[in-house]
Image (cartoon, rainbow, N blue to C red; front, side):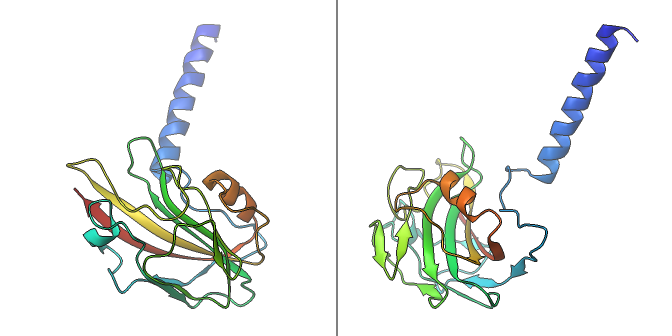
Length: 193
């Protein structure tokens, strides 16, 4: 084979590999991987404000008073030491957009009330990170006009607390929980402007 033919074959293989990746992960690597030695337990996260698959009420968005919705979770695995909550929009024009990150939630706590304060430290050791608006705490759905976006409220059960200060970024939190996730729950809401 000629060098030109080899280059064309290499380019075609790269295109096929990229296509397969985006079929398997249409919005990127959305979930945190567990280590092979740990099994991932699915548990439940709910909100009295909306059911999974429903529209998020305006109250919890930039078109309302933009407060966090009440959340509760149950059925998490034995051995859970803490939880991390991440709320994200995978449909944002610039890629995954983080609306809220809360970490080092004790396993003794199984809910967050409506209107969680936008402060770095919530008490009981609970910390909040930076969202994609560059702010601490919750900022709700605010998609471009004319588009309907998905909002995932994901809570991860960990076998430890994570050693990060308040105000951590999404990347820092995801790196810190790598290999420590033993359970996951997800609540999906939609919002359209």
